[in-house]
Image (cartoon, rainbow, N blue to C red; front, side):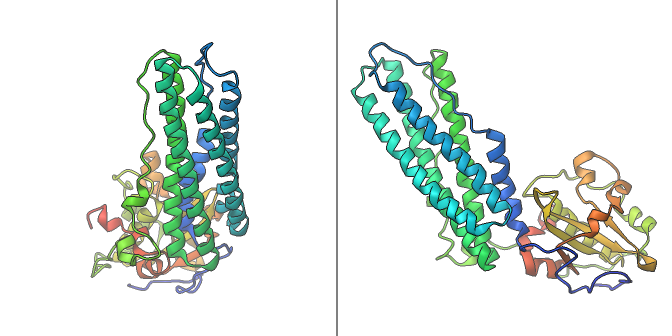
Length: 367
């Protein structure tokens, strides 16, 4: 690193800023996916119009019971994921335990409904319909079991401060919850298919994550996730610029051409690239992070110290997300100077969150 003027900034090795929070923004990022799914589906499970005079008299009651249990599980997920995102890990684990109980009640209701259907006289079309729907309902039960178990473990490790294992389990929980809601969509699709008189029913989304992923406790870190390697050398010597607004603006140019893509090339990769480019040109820059940005997710950006103790901040996603120019990325908004962590360089940031969080070099060409 080529050191510059750090006047007015915290110590460059400091890990804490002007606000405090449990330091796992990686989990918040992962659980953004979880939180967004829970809100976007809205817990809607449709009722089928399939009717037949030969159906068992209690058919509608059993069907309604299964749907009621499934609705309860959806509501539990909304609450449970909110607790996790708010770092209420003890309460989240307790909610996962209650979710297990509700899920077994749901499984019992499916079994009762299946026995009633088995005794009913159905048309061939209705028989195909219920066969398809029961397959989905059973997979939803498994999705719930797996996701609750993984989220419970994520809470355990997050509370203990073991961020690596917490992140692994949070990612697993995210995938199972993703499958959970995808299968609700497929259930609703089959209802619509049946109501149109068609027999083109869809199957459940395969829940094969367990068989294709190693056990995070018994596997080595490299089996779980091969960490990104920081290029060596990383910081290069380029034309010297100064720590001024105009010089930073010149280096930002028109911003990113590569589009923003969540969990692939997002705020963390964008911020680390900007920090790298500025430092290569002798401009001191820091990577700042906040675990709870706008009350929703984790975020990363760049802070540059200027002369006379002033600082500017760079919002890395504006250019890619809104198609604006480099100067729009520079901000003096006070909220950008309230952070949980401030990192001196890529090594400091990677030591804390892992290099995978920042690996722009795997997505962009070094220029």
